[in-house]
Length: 99
Image (cartoon, rainbow, N blue to C red):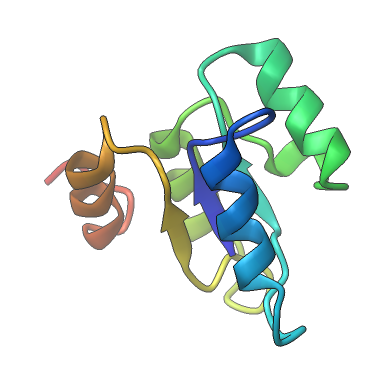
């Protein structure tokens, strides 16, 4: 699972991650938690994500994840930011392309 938004100290982000782990079948593998670089990387470290899969934007995350082999890329994304929800969904639906 990839996650867009709601990194460190965000209550709803923690709830989404907790619920995703309930059945033990979902693993967080990448994120674009925050536009704040310090908060972004701190959250990634706390969640044991590989530093090269903690992205500065959802655009970068979709673009770089879609370039990975099918067995390595995220299977789906959890978009937890209300401000960018529709835009991030549209961007992801287009496979990381703007058109």
